[in-house]
Length: 299
Picture 1: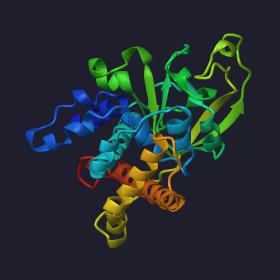
Picture 2: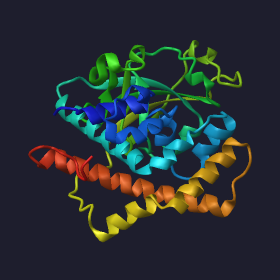
Picture 3: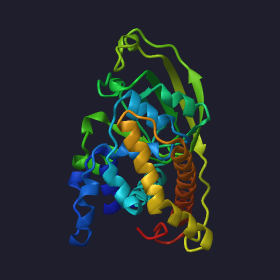
């Protein structure tokens, strides 16, 4: 199955190469959106339950989320759909490959979510074990080794993007969200014990993640049904977008957001995950059971 140009552009956007995405003249209003820095943080954080991931990134690590992404929530949702479509196509087309074994340096905050036995967000891993100083900018280091069967939804970014890959040297394998997993505690090597986080503390834990299967079941989704349409419209509601802006701006400014707005934001994220899961189920259905494998709705 061929990964199309729009899907490749979405992979580039996730990787940090949005400025290299060529937009047709009718879509030039999206230029600032695609120029956003570190969009992957937003893409992942919006899939994480609760508010702890935001606190870890924005407060503990002083990361900045580009608010321009909120002005084009419809385009952001298309990015999620295209990423998942590309991953399904890649996995379906590479079943002859061997099992993947990859590595990741994560933040300890992620351990809380992994203990639910599922990937909630996209997960970037590398095929070769090496110390990466960028990841050591995190607050509390969690070392991960990932074992996954080839049928799991994923992409080999270098294989898909070739010379367009922003970080060809990282040999990145990107896994889809909503994948079931088991965890196995591991002992750190002497070299790993020398790694340091942003506060000069050594890694706190090491685990092997055994990725098992996707929690997304292929389903035919009627995106024009009243319930699905209502859910989508709620995600784009300007008042809800202002709630997100308040929460992010507050955390990035070092202050606590209003708790009633935080509650609405967390509820919005719950609906957001539900809609993205519907999109993923529909995409998988279309790729498996339609002639052209074109995910619906059109993107």
